[in-house]
Image (cartoon, rainbow, N blue to C red; front, side):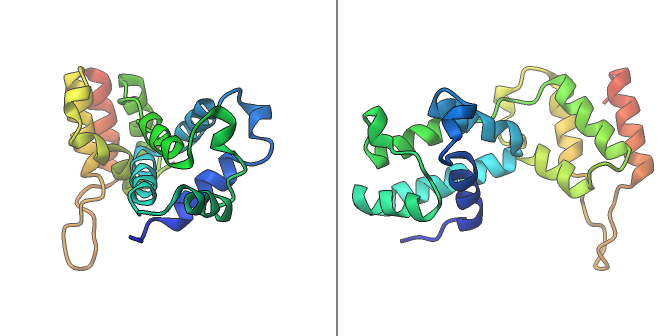
Amino acid sequence: MSTYDHKLTRNFFGAYFHQDCFCEAETWEQVVQGYMHDASPWEITRLKSSIMTLVESGLSDEALGKELDELGCEYLPSADGFTVKEWLIHVTEVLRPSPPTWEGVLQQLQLLATGAITPGKASEWATPWITRFEEIDDAQVKRALDVLAGADMIVDVQGNLLHGPVDFKAWLAEFIDGRL
């Protein structure tokens, strides 16, 4: 079987599909949406890829069920009329983060400008959207995502960053003024 991100996949199934998950959500889709609320777009994309690796592994449905069990998943797809493979495919269909909004970009810029998140985290948040610009209508959001994706750009072999706190504060001001 191809390798997959075991830690991320275990975190998803073990932490979100635990024995009491339906005390917190009414449907398995709501459980997945709860994860999407907590995770970064990069994590969501990586998880979706990991689950598809499992689906495409050639494992039987029984073996996939055992794998989910080992990952800490307490949910039984058969309770909702799915085979394990069918359910995993449905999970990947739900694992599609909503495009960033103006308010979401503003929040990321504020966090970056105040040092509440690292340039790497800002870049990690923005980068998955660079190849999905067609899903975003707001040109200002697209420009800001492009800038944020480069927040952790390294300028030399010592690992110094091209951008720093002064740049991040300027980006925030320019975004608010509509110039970014």
